Image 1: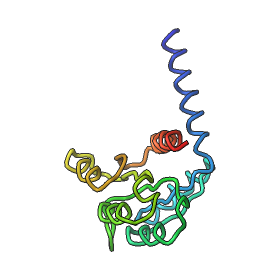
Image 2 (image 1 turned 45 degrees about the horizontal axis):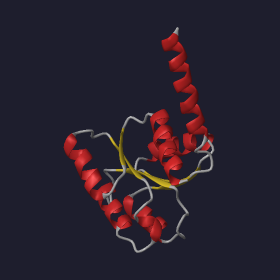
Image 3 (image 1 turned 45 degrees about the vertical axis):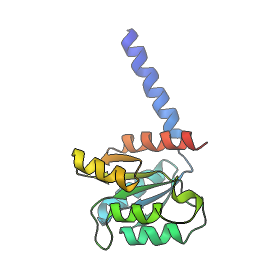
Image 4 (image 1 turned 90 degrees about the vertical axis):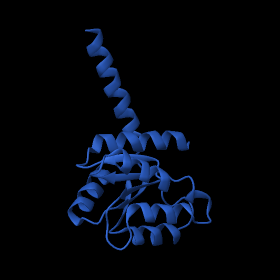
Length: 150
């Protein structure tokens, strides 16, 4: 009975945290059109404001061309044409603007090997999320960064 109560409390806390992400402005970078559509729709259903980018170069251009604070987080696919996620992250982190160093950039990838995680961290990514998408995990991680931002 005690375990069940603890589990229910954890679920309630998780739901509260996810509710806290409503209104977050997220840039989703994904070259697979179907994946991009799915992630955008699910995020929008939870009340997030979502902008999509089909590759890393578009993401760099969108981020660099927008006023600081336009985005609260970036979900970055790793393997894309034109500019991959690691290169795009490095370009964003190198920009001369206050949010370039602090915006949470979360890797989205099917690769979960130590080498892959090391590469994303070295590029300046804050977290490493794996595909197939676990949207509850994505919501939870976004909530963590939303809380730390305040």
